[in-house]
Image 1 (cartoon, rainbow, N blue to C red):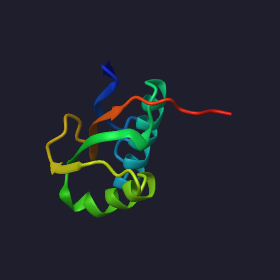
Image 2: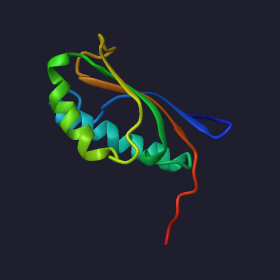
Image 3: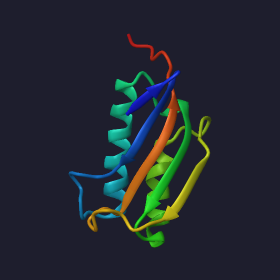
Image 4: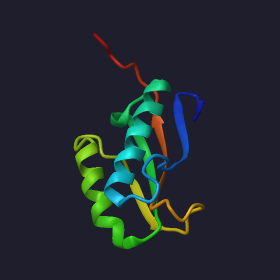
Length: 108
């Protein structure tokens, strides 16, 4: 991640543990990784500014979208693009790139 003037930039986030798994498992892993990286950067999924999702196969769109919809806040869904791309590792079905605003995360 890179942070500049209160904006968090995350480069391509890909599945490592679920390489070769179905799109639901890979999407869930990538979103969990994003949650952790955003937390470490002082942000969270409620402050996403833009997300680009790369799918190796657009046939995975519905499966990815089911997991995405369960994860993203309905009140703060960011602008999003989803495109088909040849990913660097053939075992990857998904890669995500995003930006988010930094925020104060309240903890008890």
